[in-house]
Amino acid sequence: MKKVILILFLFSCAVVKAQNPIPNPSFENWTDHGNYSDPDGWQSDNYVSAGFGVVPVEPDTVPQEGELCAKLVTKGGDTLSSISAAGILCAGTFNSTILFCDGGFPCPQTYNYFNGYAFYTPVGDDKAGVAAYFFKWNENKNARDTIGVAFSPMEDTGGDYVYFSLKFSFISLAEPDSACVILASSTSAGNNPPKGSKLRVDNLEFSDVTGIDEATSNASAVFPNPADDKIIFQMTPTPDRYTLNIYDAMGRQLKSILLRTNHYQINTTNFSQGMFYYSVNNESGKVVSSGSFMVQH
Image (cartoon, rainbow, N blue to C red):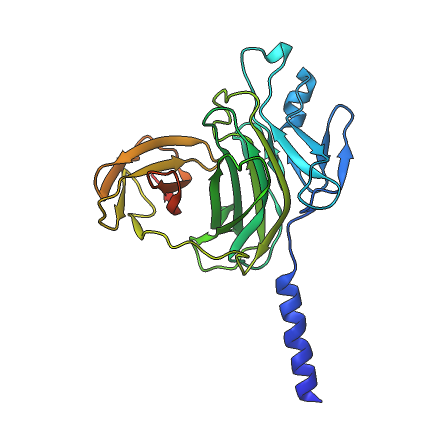
């Protein structure tokens, strides 16, 4: 009898761990706010721009599965003719001042991967951004600490959905208490991105399995982390040339640097404090290494 109870207990724990904490992950349910709609459990930048007649985030009937998906489009309008607004969607409360997510959703455990489906049609060489975070409240600082991050820029998916699987980089061994997901139709959000870039997303999940075979990546080291006045990127020596891309917490590209050596140093004196991401791409544009680093002055 005790053995049966133990098996049931272990099974129930596995089921709990397997549950997907992301709210409304398939974007089937939406709330009408009058001049715009947002998916339940999410907030977009619609509330900022809808008054100008611009609605960057909408439900769409071209899902990967089911009836609906979320569509994020970089738009402008008659009253916004000189500027454009990227579609931004946040599983939490969107903060238009910092283009980031306040709050989030309960998540009392870590997962290894952030998975989902994306269908991206950019204008020019624009890129979308998909990111997920784990947080834990720090009573001493009266603020939340970032526990883990998964981020990637999203390039043209070739006219259909592609499956993505992003591995979390963990900054702390602590268990989180909450998480958030942020999606953007352009990594130039806030910097007048090109109008028309379109990102559809569907069936998001946190999991402990990737769902696809992980690609072999070139080893890279980033130090010191956290950084103050400089950050050093050390790649495995290779005759190939790579491009180093740096992004801020919202996924906006800050730098793109052609690496002519396997050792490169960036001055971070003028970087704001917070989280940053990097990706190293080979000559064909494929990401061979990626991760995150903190800047603390």
